[in-house]
Amino acid sequence: MNDIAFDKQHIWHPYTSIIKPLPVYKVKKAKGCKLFLDNNKILIDGMSSWWCVIHGYNNDHINNALKQQINKVSHVMFGGLTHGPAIELTKKLINILPKGLEHIFFADSGSVSVEAAMKMALQYWQAKGKTKKKKFVTIKKGYHGDTIGAMSVCDPITGMHSLFKDVLIKNIFLSSPGCKFGQCSQKKDVEETEKVLKEKHGAIAAFILEPIVQGAGGMKIYSSEYLKNVRKLCTKYNVLLIADEIATGFGRTGKMFACDHAGISPDIMCIGKSLTGGYLTLAAVAVSKKVAHGVSRKDMPFMHGPTFMASPLACTAANASIELLEKNNWKKHVSDIEKTLIKELDECKSFKNVKDVRVIGALGVVQMKKNVDVADFQKQCVKRGVWIRPFMDLIYLMPPYVISKKELLTLTRALKDIIRLE
Image (cartoon, rainbow, N blue to C red; front, side, top):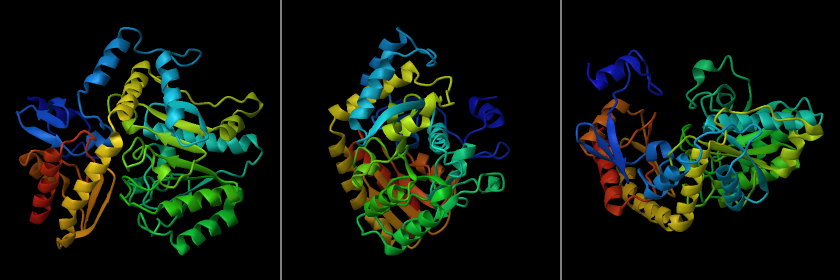
């Protein structure tokens, strides 16, 4: 039995059936923006491996940092112990995060960071004696992860978790903002938000949302004014604001964090994905002093502690990744990618099977009028030497920041060629 046949029979890949799985392609190595397959086919990666490999694969700076760290300590429990990479990373994060986020809680993954953030919000109000504040409010078309708590604030239809709707905590969903990026916030969106917070704030622990760009729930890009208004209303009605920047953090939208487009600071922020440059799994919850001290009121501990919390290797990769961002003029790279995506994908607006095209920073989205056949689309991509993975009705590009103009044009033109055939 060859490796692909063995994989198909025994390995369960994400978002697929074990009985009839989607096809997989075996990668033997990767460098820069290229994936080298076992059959000698070379693919240009348009996904940054689910949005995290921002500096490209096999990066010398991150490689060298990890080699040095592995000779010191690869893992040590974070209960009762600490280490240099975690301390250094915390300093770096506090320096670049929105003002007021002063405390860092490390987690294993994005979903786990969302779970921790939600628990923090609940414990904050419990400690203040506001025991009825147990609900979360969010917006439709959102996605926050695949664990139980995170699923309860994902869109019940587009969030991929409709199968579990009857067992999840029932939270409060508002309409996804109707205002596109660059537009004024729509009056109806503000009125709906204020109405819900005014009437139900006594039962609401926090408002959780993805700032500016909604990810896997629908790839909507909305107005920074809406985000400003949400911040104001949460403050007015004594509701915590949780910003899920797992997909948008570290420059993807053209700002270091998407919250920076609105000039706001949340009470709690979740970060992950590109935190380590795509090398190792690591996430973090950044928390304001008000919330951190509230959660810890009367010396109460926060009962959450992943085994690999603040892994020295992962923190080392994150430190090296942030150093590269600061050194390599990421803003110009992201701006150049944005200009190319706008110019190249504009043509798709004229295709009869395309519903919408939207671009922000190093993210380009083509929304189709019907769901895409993922297996067939990826077969067409591999044939053209590119790696693009659509979901539902969305075909998108989220390439590494180091991608060359030539590589990016190969991606956009392959995407257009395939869409023309649909």
